[in-house]
Image (tube, rainbow, N blue to C red; front, side):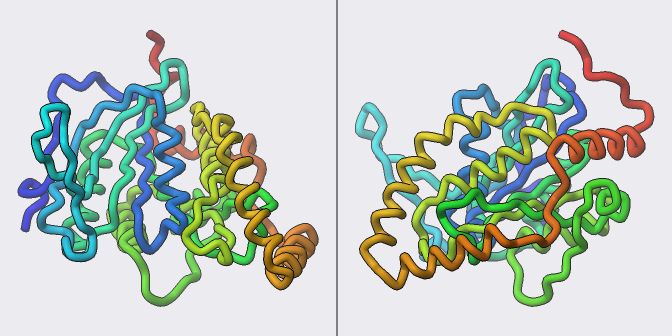
Length: 296
């Protein structure tokens, strides 16, 4: 199967993008409580973000696992909503970068072809760098803003941004495969991961989405509307507080996690302002011909 058989593009007449960065989050193995894909939904909320490409769902999914939805339109005609993998663009006039955003669904099969679709779009749209977002269950209390950690295989990005090298060995998701493909193609890539309190099960935890957006906003120099999440954060924390308060063992466990969290001294990412300056310096060195962002 070729990429051109499954990737449909809508880039005819598309005005040039300003130093675009591709951001990817996929539901599945690397998206606990949908925190990563939820962050991208908030990023694009109330923003004009036209679709510039889409990946055909049919070859990539076992539809007994990822079932499509049936819905009725205004004329009561039956429609099917398939798993969507759509590339959208978000322009930020006067900002440092425009964004290409893929908030999709982790495929079940043909991961190589799926990842090639992503790397093809990164190349066709001239993306300077690819940032993948993920969320995993972690021993963090729901009462604290979870930290964001990052890694890269790019030596210069590791040095500039204080990132770690990937150390995990074992079963992985398609994001892990994508990172490996990006490295082989010499496309700079960063993986940002946030923890989600493991004891919450599949309950939403918008604090984790907000933490990811906070880093993206400062590092990429674009507004992400993460402040609008405050109401959702308060609502869900109240629900989590009530659930924990009903179980004395759970309440004691959360207090233990709070103490451990507050005492933690291990190195985290540098400040967002430092990251933004270093990322811009890295991208200028990668593309010395780039000038200042175009003016409207």
